Image 1: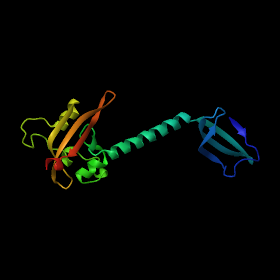
Image 2: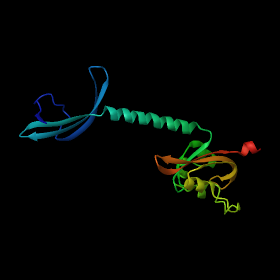
Image 3: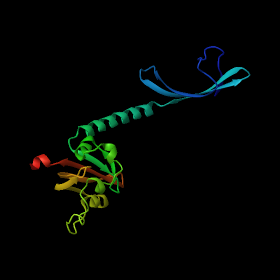
Image 4: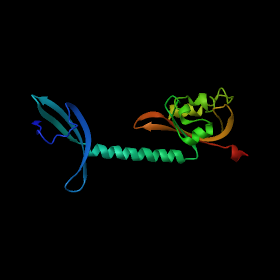
Length: 193
């Protein structure tokens, strides 16, 4: 709806063009209503005309706040875990690294994300490691959607040194689609000693 703006009372910052801004108001029953205001200020023969739209975004704001809380909680959980936790996509590339995983592997999370697990830290394919025809556990998990546990693996740190590891790997599904796997591992060096 186009309404003529009063010749007085317009904020001094109101100028020609489109303006958008969030605002919040308290409803008469006490709850807060979040609005997204879009206003277009036009000039017609020296008269300012305000074309405005107010959209109730209360549910969106609540969803964004809930998402922020869940994201923060996830970060706290991943950051507090003593075990290394790594997310992998369907091709075995690293998508998520918690601080413990980076510390155990001797690097930082950003240097692991995007790298291939086999080329970086995970035991090589069984055929390359002399285990005969045994399938690669990581490959089997990603292809067959299963879960595996191994308590006598050998992982590699980023500097090339090896360490004994215990790990579990489980496939990840999002609704009906396979999206990768989650790998949880720990350095067993002290326990072996």
